[in-house]
Length: 344
Length: 245
Image (cartoon, rainbow over all chains, first blue to last red; front, side):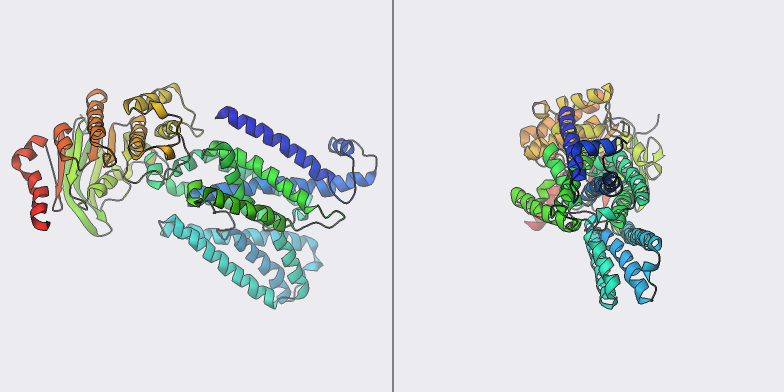
């Protein structure tokens, strides 16, 4: 088991380095690979412009992809374990819709009030992040209140879907009444954009994601016990309620912050844990968490590479790319397993 | 000497619906106790209340003179292990990894096993006769084999008390008597107290040191001999025949 894990993780580290370099090399301006390595090592490039393109545009985007991939994959894994549902993920629970509503209220609500966001870029950027996190936290507080009242975790899952729908309904109303330019900036946010993360915010995002990933790993034992069912988990000394709260908190941190900075990115959170389980053939979180981090990085870098295929300075919206990769994969696992319940 | 388990004026049930009330029993030495009663009389409810999985309506359960309510999950997991009628929710796991769960109360946050843990796991698997398929996925086992694996997990937990809710239900006759024999040995050799609910009257009367009989909302504890002589068991199950068939 351990040797299989080592081989898998070494393979995934190598492939993620290759994808990372490919992601840096692709773009409207051709930069040779040796020069990229040179610039990354801190040496001066042959052309000043290459330096700027790589360090202020491509590198932050690739790092954002790495953070988003690992965070979304791990939060998906945690949700699937918590809800015992192979299709659970931060998106199904309404966390991203909550974040979306926060952003919608911010972008479109202010324009309805006649306050223009274009007057201050700083205000606009941080406002989006803060309102997205507030929206996600609001949904999570509702879910936590529900968990305290309802014993059945499946009911909470359905409630999450309902909350998501309500948030979407409010977003539609806001969209209907908002002006053209604010509508456009909101729609752009919903498409997801890895390049919109400013270097400053990237540091903050890195910090939040690291806390989330470490926290996710440290509750692996509780989650392994939780897989047996709540009664058995309790009889093995696990405090089930505390575990649930921790999982929700970790997910909020991971999915909420990524959604805030990069926009909603779907399906990475659902499919990555399945790929990890398929490769490793085990439900042990001590192995699945690191594997999900590595796989999530690979998938997200690949998605970012595909997003740049049009060439020139145009890119596909990242959310469309992950959906296009993710949904066929979900079809495939459903048809391959016939019964989706057999996946956990 | 401290009592292993004492139940005092315990009322059990769900919400306000009392199933059993005023239960008073003391267990002062290791023994095999079989819980007998018709379906729906509260056997599972009693086991779940004793293990703290559902709250009691009134009264208290004491383990070594400490009241159940005030024990943490961690403390309880070292006092008793539980096998319920509902199967574990997990499928994607090998037999050995499943039995390893029994050591969770003792391992650190990384679940690293020590020598003692490995020893307990191996002896539990040997006792239950499942060493031939340690690497098999539990989804591929028969019902009977899975029941043995579940018992091995509880034995590996190495607690003074083991609660088993109808562990014989998926076993054939040979396996059923083997199971009772194994439980009897655990009591004799490892000084465990085992409380199991079962519909296997013959085996229960044969192997158990004590019978807890549930009838008409009351629990009566006594030796198998007492119940056989008093005719109470026949009254319980025989009476049913006359009434309904």
